[in-house]
Image 1 (tube, one colour):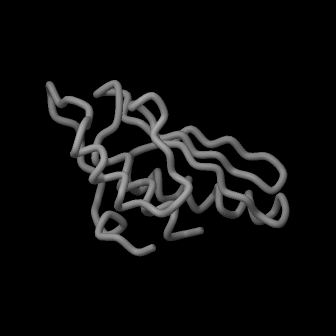
Image 2 (cartoon, helix red, strand yellow):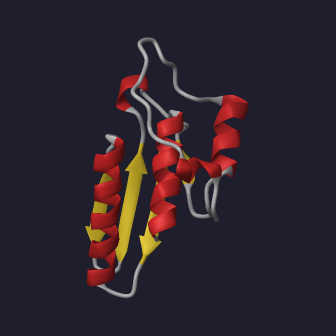
Length: 110
């Protein structure tokens, strides 16, 4: 699924910025591919499956490069044939548009 989100850039947080909630949160979620779920209203999570460790590692490295370019870093759990991403914005204590941008970019390199 190609969305407008994957063409956007993560932006530095603003003082006093609040986490997304309600309709805004739902709207951003609907722009992501299947498999993403919102955990406790505060994190995005998705597990990706691969044929083997090498493919999972390659994906992990691609996501790592994107995270560096965007200066927005997920928690990444890598194991044989699987990669789990947890994304949230620490400074707002929940989800921001940056999280959805990074998630869309991860989907695009899958």
